[in-house]
Image (tube, rainbow, N blue to C red; front, side):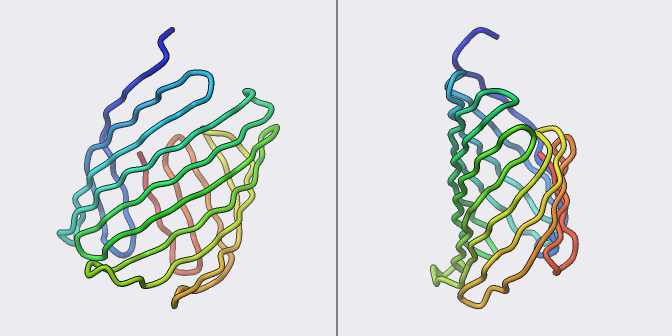
Length: 168
């Protein structure tokens, strides 16, 4: 395509230990070919009868296969567990990169319940990558190392609480 924007629709599926299997629908929009401004939204139904709505936005500036800088922010709301707000910033070069970010959580009554800061490093690209990092928990959240891998949109991660996997 030669235009400056695109929109895509798809099916979202995954699994996490808190809510079980999920399935839903999503939409992704890209607004600029040169800078890479995008918005993603999804709505999923979970095995535990909860539902989650997610919205995120990001910007990426890159020289393909050489250097990239990315900023992302967003949030999700689950009808059983509440609100999650997140943000991250990363830089990549020649097939590897580093990222820092935060996740913060509120229960369904609006009470802050904690979160964490994290840093990670990875090798690979958007098709397949593997990495790991460390997160510092606060407000009752645990700290520790974690590992993750992604292949063709399917992801696996382990932070000491068991494996989680999902896809988009």
